[in-house]
Image (tube, rainbow, N blue to C red; front, side):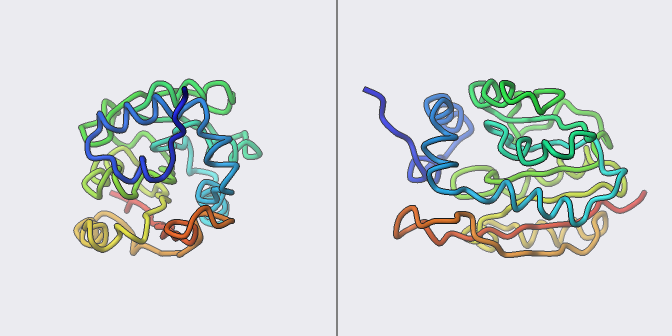
Length: 212
């Protein structure tokens, strides 16, 4: 019997291997049983703000924690932009491949140094990666490293971890190499999924890497 996975499982992750195991089990049902069922809006919100803040030079795009490719689907209309996907789960990336919106797929643990040269991407986008049980603000150092000077950074950070897991402090530490961040608080979901998480909000965090 297949056991359905959900936010309770995702928010209780402790290690990268926990993520691998969860998303291996969840990949095949993730889009229907989670994203569609709960009107998961974070990916479309990220793309909305990418459209608002981006320039023609903000390419290629790296979708961080791409999962099944929800951001890529939302970006499909901007098909002139090259999009790469990075995620720890090969099963989730395989689902993303089927959507035919990405140019490259990178299976990697974001908590470790990435095998990506510096200044490679014109934009870094992410939704649902910086949340309970997933990766913390220490990842920002590597993501800024691989961003081109002047490149655009837009990610969601769950309000429940923004302050107590050091995201605000990390942004302050990066102050010398990034523009002053702009924040937009939005609903993560369009419908109430349950009493505990139905009203969850995320902070869309936007900045640019300063020109060297």
